[in-house]
Image (cartoon, rainbow, N blue to C red; front, side):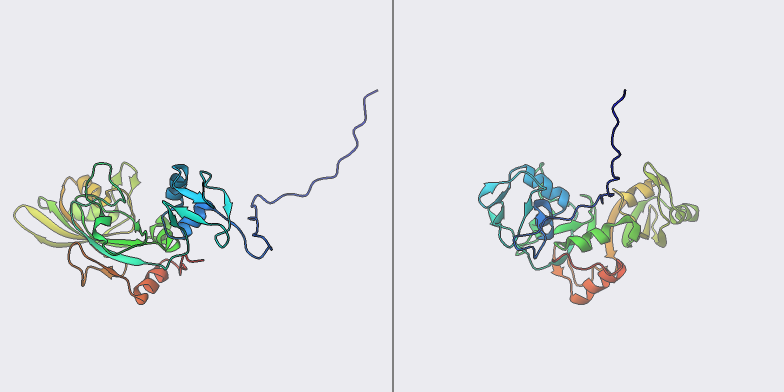
Length: 273
């Protein structure tokens, strides 16, 4: 005779979202080590995970290689490259990048980076988007990770404006193609605002505003209409312009400019805890 299995009570459905543990006393939640680094303004969470894996982060004197380790910033002594990790004042920097500088913190080829231009900035600030080696113009850097993520979110359609010097005499048909959007290897681009500035005997000067951040997008769009970019300058990021900056210099954003950026991103709050 088969053994009878007693009926089981249905278990309650568990939430897939786990609440973080709390610090001693239960008054504040703990945070993962990668989140602490990111929120302190050192870099993105992806960068933080890499730094932790490389052994550059210590907790209470011990090297910690687990980015998901729970820590209490108020009680644990956390260091990154020997420097204590703590909440930092938010910095918003607008740089006029020259041609010939790479938009990265360190370059394995030894080329100059945009960080070589940030003399006196003693906090890590991450680039909001990038400019390639041969492109000059505005670059925004900040340690406010929440605002940076909002500005680079592809669903925000955040506008960036460029001055373009293109080879040859672009026709109105080619300009209309750019305005409608062109097919690239990674898909159709969104429509662009394109204004013809002038022609010379061999070149066309344009103003182009795009709302995406694909790699080398403006150059690839111009190539898609059978031309080539000879010079490219980013002259505007949202409400921010080159006014008051000379090439290779930077300035802090005003409180009004930061508020305007947040308004464009749906009111993104500061990454400060």
